[in-house]
Amino acid sequence: MPIYEFICDSCKHAFEAIVPNPSATAPCPSCRGEKVTKQFSTFAAHTHPHQDAPCQTSTCGYQKGACGSGMCGIN
Picture: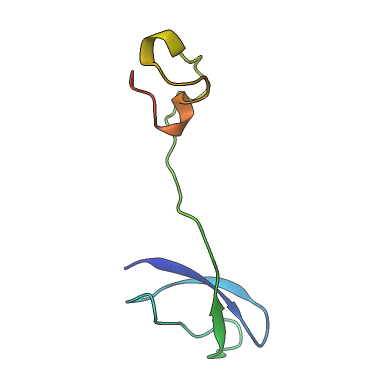
């Protein structure tokens, strides 16, 4: 099940909750209010532990800086 971010309409507390489907909501853990607003959030990305390594543009063909983005074809 995905984790969604919410803000309580009553007390403005921001929180995360695991909900069974995209249309479901969760009560506020601070005030137990039922009126909450789902927030836009982005996904988390895991970067390569060697992101400080210099890019080998001529070897991998990607632009400089691609090593830490997961686009590196060498690693």
